[in-house]
Length: 416
Image (cartoon, rainbow, N blue to C red; front, side):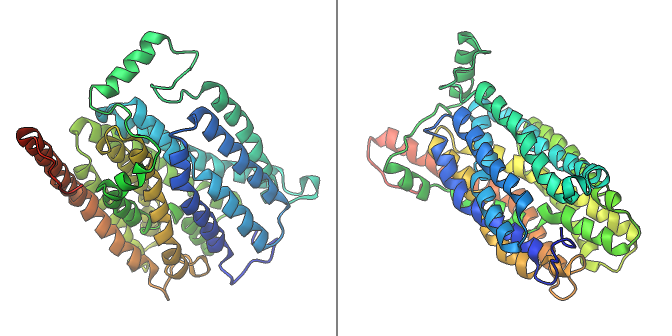
């Protein structure tokens, strides 16, 4: 695309990422409040259809401005997907199951990312010049075609939530048992989408604690590592285009292993903090190598690949939110959406000025890898110790206030 459209020093790739993020920032929190009143079986597949149409339109785009507009629209509607599915998972599974189930869902995205690399390599080899179009345009057409059966599947098979499900493949006993499982943990759906929702959200501790955690995760820029990895491989002038597409898929393989492994470990431990701390130490090692930069190519390649462990933070944080927000479905939905939006908002200027694609892969002028390393250390400490401390502090205070009210029968004001 860069060569065909004469993209060059304008950091077009970074701006395409930025406009996509702006769309997700605006759409995420509102999309996840909507899902508490519109059935997920209708809302999520409909958003998929709309954003896939915008993806299809990209095959006709010829200027950077056209790509920016389309990427914004894609982000706006795609923002419903990740927090929406995580919200639904939180409706069905118990606290001791959430990390694994969240990981299994996110892993599907990782596998899709890996498949995308192989698809790009195959399209470059087999579709270049077909119909008078370069292979990268065919990619957007195939992307849309793959989305159609997924949307149809969602309309017919997505189960909604245990308290609203009409899934034909569940009998009444199974539906009732699903409701009992979450109600036994005190997580029956409470709250309504009314005027009180803003006060409930503003006074909650979860919205702030988890927004900080997700922001620190995005500021590592780990989600762009495959792009930077590919740019570095291309700069070596030792690999073919299919190899440049295929080799970075190893990042997805590491992501897959860590998501499944950490989800299982955190559910068995009943704690997510120690698992996050361990992964943070590995990330610190990898980013230290990339910050040094002047190391052997083999060590650098190992660092790029192992940074793939970063992805396990998203299902761990999603499971954490679902477990700590209890039965307030609007609070839980909003926190899942807003933490993503805040995280994407803070990463836009960081990615543009510290890790611009025009200076990839070394970022010598901006010292981008060093800045990202600082946020990796902050992420390690916040998720390793900070979230657990905040949970104990605020929930302990809430329990004490509740006990005082019950003991004295008084309307006592206290911290949210």
